[in-house]
Length: 237
Image (tube, rainbow, N blue to C red; front, side, top):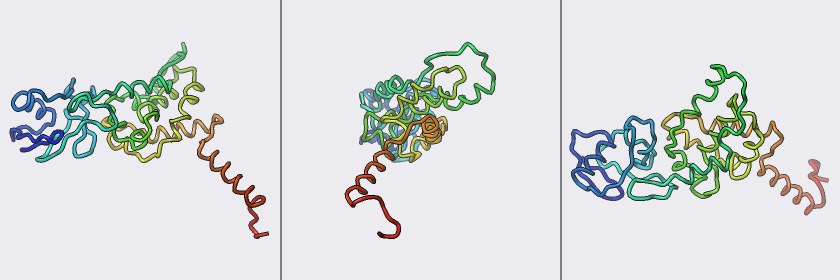
């Protein structure tokens, strides 16, 4: 059975169906220079993320079919073959204040933990950044992982600070997201990243922030009125 990796075709033992097992087979029998990453082999560490036929997957939890094409993640620097550098993704945590800044000494209850359980399950695989059309054209975009992590800490009963986080996600953040949902489709933990970003937008509006696109539209509309001698008259006078 053939597997194509970066335009190189390999004949894989037909007994092998798992993608990561296929990589290891190639490494041991066909091409000992093939570079790929893995750790837990059970979908927990996220280090074996790749693209199969253009779709982000974890190699350790994915099977493959004949002539499937495997490529490294998109939008991230490739170190070698299927290994990528996600240091820029991790850096977005600092830019977005996506961490616990000021911890309360108050008691935490089980329902407090439940509120952040799903967002806390992120395995840092970077698949969401690979699939994100905004990140592909704007490297300054904070991106799916950082924004859902901000929502996680804004929902955390231990966190006493919220304004710093909301301030940090206004520029190149929540308003730049197209809400296409591509990140949701490839997240191996089934985190509703799009939903989290929508909630962050609502929280921002509730706290006095405004979508800058709306501001630009209002300013443009005001200039339109001025150019034509005043406001719009529905009666045509």
